[in-house]
Image (tube, rainbow, N blue to C red; front, side, top):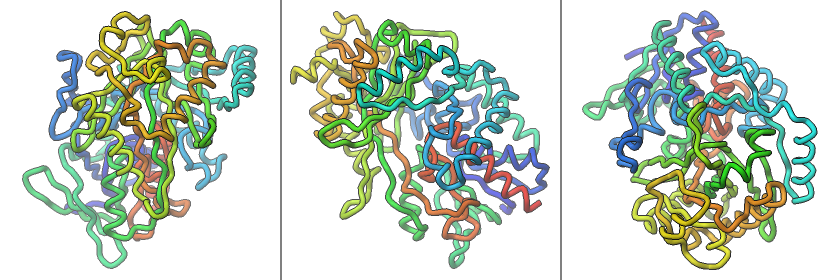
Length: 465
């Protein structure tokens, strides 16, 4: 097959690349290759079975059109200060302008016009003051919350719009490798699990998301694509009663707090806060189960969940951060018999495991019904665990009751970011014709920044015709 542009991965970065090319009137032929299924064919059986079925050949929550975005809580961070390091490559001003533009596209496809975190100025100041006193930094970030069910509808609308405007999307096709001639990328080799075939293109855009970070890392090593070791986040998903988070939920909706707790002073941050939300499970390759969270627009629980992530960087002599994090996850999965582990914060401080009967007697009831009560500290690295404990105790000053005995910690929460691909401001890699976008590139984290990166790539490619 021959095309002008082949996009590997139908997550936000790949979607917005194609979308912007079409909007700019490009007549180039665009082919998207997606390992998973279309929005309408993505099905997670857990809502019926109440437990993860470990679907094969991939998890429908993380794989398919729009990636994990279709089944996430659907929060769009509207500040260039949140979502990765892309602003350092393209300038903060351009990043913010592109975020604002991408936001209008989400609105065109039906996103809620209301923005969280812009009101209650006096109360925001009080929260910031308490954060400063606790040694934490509160990052201002307006949030547009689509909601899990609404995100599904919005991405379905985008999917159909792309198809109606001539973008060919190959669902169920996995990219196996690049087609190279000297230092020029000529396209990709893909497979439908029955046979392989080649797609030749002038431009190859790899946008495989967090789900494809490990694959891209191996590709970089195999083909000597210039890159540098990236960051990996290891942490937990914390769940408390809504009453504890009531003020923060109302004033900020999502509290983005950053700290460097003693004794190690690694960067620790909150991420993906879900008021009235639900803790969820995702499955990666080799049956690795990781915890996540989402929230619906209408359907609410009695709890709020958010992740607390500790950043790790490796360079010499070890430079495989993704492999390291996966080993932590595998060890935790082993303790939970292949599922997610949950423990009360007070039990961690007391040096004991949590038992199922204790969860049943607690004020905070798990929203992940098949999580296994146990001992997170038996698998979590000492450095990460101490950082997390210190951060939770600091959070308790900002949000009284956050570090209560019954606060639940789920593990493993892992965020894989590919090794940072070395690129210029037009997203050209060391291989001519190859571009890497989104979370898999190591430059973005999250829906909006990935979407913005796709917009800029689409504009650049549209200039060619």
